[in-house]
Length: 127
Image (cartoon, rainbow, N blue to C red):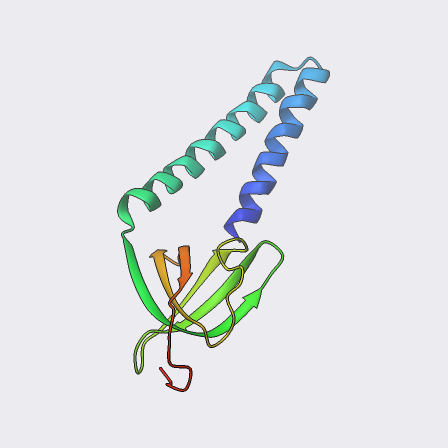
C-alpha cells in the first residue's frame, strides 16, 4: 500500500515539475521538485533504517508452501515441530525450489536473501 502512495507522489511531483517548466511557472515547478525531494528523502530514510536495524539470520527447514507471483515468490518453511517462517524472495532466489524440499535460507526481516537446497541422502525419512 505504501508503495502505491509513493508511486502517486513521484508521478504527481514529475507532472508538477514538468508542467511548471512548460507553463513557465516557477511556483508550480518548485512545488513539484519539493514533492520529489521529500518523497526521495522519506524513502531513503526508510531504506537506511531497515538495513541498519534489521539483523540477518539463517534458517533451515522444509518448504510447506511455494507461490510464484509475477515479480517475487512466497515461501513458507517449517523450521521445527511448531515453528513456521513465512517470507518472500525474488524469482531468481526461489528458482528451482519445490514444496517438500529441505532448504537453508538467509533472511532479513520478511525478505529471503539467499536460498539453497540441503542435500539429503535418505529419501524415505520425513523431516
